[in-house]
Amino acid sequence: MNTHTLLSVVAADSRAAASPAPRPPLVNVDGIAKHYLLPGLGRSFSVKSVDGVSFAIGQGEVLGLVGESGCGKSTIARLLTRQTTPTSGRVTIADQEIANVKGEELKRLHRTVQLVFQDPFGALDPRMQVGTSMEAPLAQHGIGTRHERRQMVMHMLEEVGLDESFSERYPRQCSGGQLQRVVIGRALLLQPSFLICDEPTSALDASMRTQILNLLTDLKRRHGLTMLMISHDLRVVRHICDRIAVMYLGRIVEIADRDTLFEAPRHPYTRALIAASMLDQTGLYAPEIQLHGELPSPLNPPLGCHFHTRCAHAQAKCSQAEPEFEAASDTHQVRCHFWRELQPEEPAENGSAQNRRNRVN
Ligand code: SF4
Image (tube, rainbow, N blue to C red):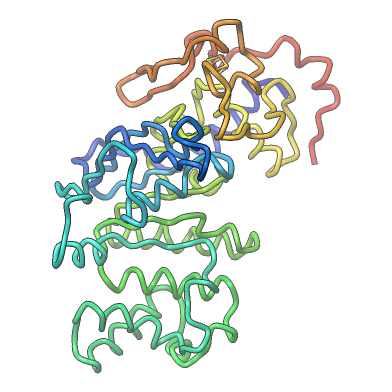
């Protein structure tokens, strides 16, 4: 299977839902960076976990953030929830720069921005019944009477697909998928305007993963949720996101609406991630766009284009000059010197011999 055919298969699969219309932004991330100094080594030895990232998320929009482990995705979640402070840049949510928020406003921010983590077991107190865990944030924020809070919890359990009896269970008496429903319900009880999901399905098996993604898709539709969906897996973000940003070594290398990203990816890294997700899903193999090697250390990233040590299209310029983030269209940006030459319909010449070894399960 050549590049074109592979990408066409992916595009057909991703065409099921419509592209998003432009919306007024709720979240603005402007040139944000997080550099960690290494103790005893001084300023010149810093890890650039996030390095000048900018994006906006519209009201009711779901933005996907994908990339390999260690590329900086979870640091962005921590920056957006003020669990860590940026080295530079700023984050604005609902027109408020979050670095300046204090007192009651900070409490309100903690209510309106909710985070769902990868590990639901770690997110819940094992000594507390599920209902008590779900009720606790409501009590902390002074919402409702005890009776009203219990009613809200029961209603939310139903909304996330669990019956009322779960309120009396302990976490050890629930499956991972059931607990992730509880965690999502607990976050939604606070009626957040912005929900961040950091690898919400990666600790779950395939059938549970589909169920949780279907639940999030359904909740997004019913509540008009604005979300950031962080995942290493393109299949997850394709399921639910309106737009997708691809990260590599602390930077966004491509961002586009979902259909464009799957139908006309311009960055070699995006193409490799799509190929990898298809390999997992179908066994189809496209060696010319396969990703090879490990993610380089963020302590010592490659000069020029960070991706040049793994890129099948790298040329001399790539190790010498950093590519700019350029607009391929109004809704599509890419960071590659040669994106114009990487047409999605271009078949890979050197793939023919290897393609004979393609595997189709
Ligand atoms: Fe590959 Fe060069 Fe583009 Fe980087 S700039 S992605 S190394 S072709």
